[in-house]
Image 1 (cartoon, helix red, strand yellow):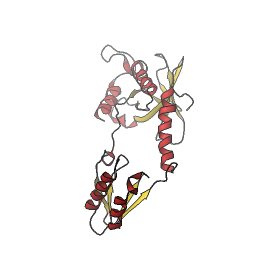
Image 2: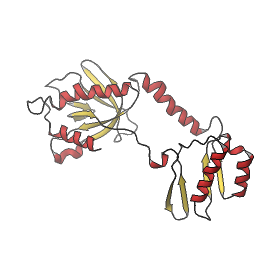
Image 3: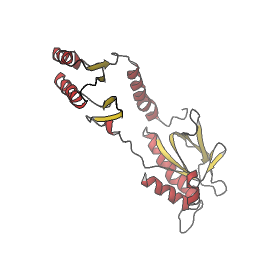
Image 4: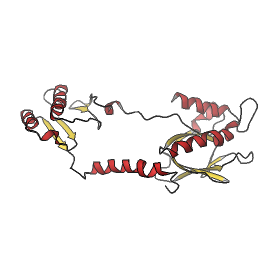
Length: 239
C-alpha cells in the first residue's frame, strides 16, 4: 500500500508532458512503461490492480481511483483496457487512449470521465489469517456463539489426523457449547474409530458437502476453469 501511495504522489506532481526535470511525463509513462507492464501481467493469466490518476495537487488526490484490469486491446491508433470498477458494478467499463504518445491527445477516456494516466499497482494476494494452512482462530462476535475458524485449506489425509483435528476443536470450544463442523465428504470420517469418538462427543456435529457435484464443488470448478482455460489463454478481448 505504501508503494502505491508513493506512485499516486509521484504521478500527482509529475507534469503530463516531458520536461528536463520530471522526465518523460505522466502521459508517456502511462503508454510506454505502465501499459506494457499491465499487458504482460494479463498475458500471464492474472488480473491486475491499476491506479487511475487525475490529481495535480495534494488536495485533489481523493479523486484518484483504483480498478482491476482483466483484458486489453493493443491497437492502432487507439488501445483499450477492460476494467472492473467498483463504482460501476455489473457494467463493462473500458479505458481508451491513443496508443502512441500524442501531445494533442494525452488523456485517458473512460466514458464521460477522463484521467491523466494509470499505472500497475504493487499487489500480491495474501490469505487471511483464518485461511492459513492448519491455523485455528477463535472469534466471539456473539457471546452465545464460539466459532473456530479453520478455513478451506485444511488437508487431513488420515483418520488419526482427523480425530486429532476434532479433539483440537473440542479442547478449544468452551464447555457447554455445541460445535458445528463443515467438512468435505472425504472417507476419513467413516472409520469405526471416528464413529465411536463422535458417539462419545455428541456435542460435535459434522456436516458434509455432497459427493461429486455439490454447489461448492461447482463454484471451485468454475474458479479453476476461468483462470486456467480462459484468462491464461490470451488477452480475452471478448470478455
